[in-house]
Length: 430
Ligand SMILES: *Cc1c(COP(=O)(O)O)cnc(C)c1O
Image (cartoon, rainbow, N blue to C red; front, side, top):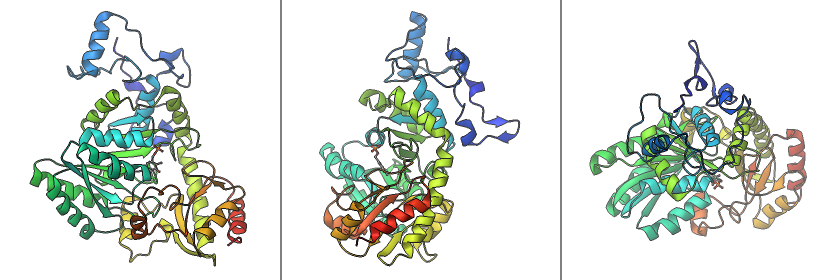
């Protein structure tokens, strides 16, 4: 009754370890369970029929943690808020990119972030977080969590222990530090956070407090291809799958991966909050995962050429592109160590002038679309100060270097000469 899908979770051929890009086409799925269909069907069903009353009882006992799984036993399918075949296959595949034990998918990146935080924060706790973070995350931490008795202390991305350690000292005075939350590279400045440093400070705090904070990292910008935070000290890696992973700007979804015991409370909260992904979206993301590597690689190649073009442009004063980090920059060594020197394809640049100049560039774009979001096949541009980071108080934006002359570009997979021609004529409008 309980199926083992061991053969369909092949990680090796003999001694040869398979790469995720190969595993995306088959891992975790048994065609013989679905009439031989090569691709997983979309399981558009809210509920699942039990073969017997005993089977139903067994499934529930396992799902609600009333007993441990027997050797080789897989959780049975019960109800699509708890599990669904499309999501199970997708979650197995998502975990492969970071060699994680467990992956979970959510209805949005924010659903992933909020469910992970809710699973680990309690009234009286404090969250220490890097800044800047995604606008929605910032709003959740600044405006919503305090109503539940959760305070926060921020530290600036791009610094060393001298920036994080004082934030932790301040947080300790406020309460139990339960989460160290990071976003690296930070949106939109591309400042980096050293995850080894976060892990070491979490270990130290664990000894002092008798409760080790969980290190969470939003890996939307460089993951899962270029940056693998679990191997650098993160406990939970979070994604807006809406961006590079789904990659076609046609779905909203989120993900999180980590060790099985760390993810278990998150899975429990997801079931009760109802923040899971739906089967159709899950199916689309499985399709996207098959081309993830070639999409991310091509957009990163395009991005390098565009960053170089902008660097030499007389009307551009600064390009915040990771590939241009100077060796003297504290982020340089983090970039080499943590990102393998991969610069990704979303970055900001400052034009000469004010908001009006920046807006003129956006209003004169031709094939590059004026829209928020990132990581799709098409190139998008936006104005972080007035758009994605509109909610962030002006003084915070100014301190973090998010100015009114800053534009953000997410470079897609179009022909790069066409993109440069578009930028060239748009910049002529300043
Ligand atoms: C878009 C984004 C989110 C939020 O994801 P949604 O899928 O829009 O909910 C979180 N973090 C980062 C870095 C993002 O870019």
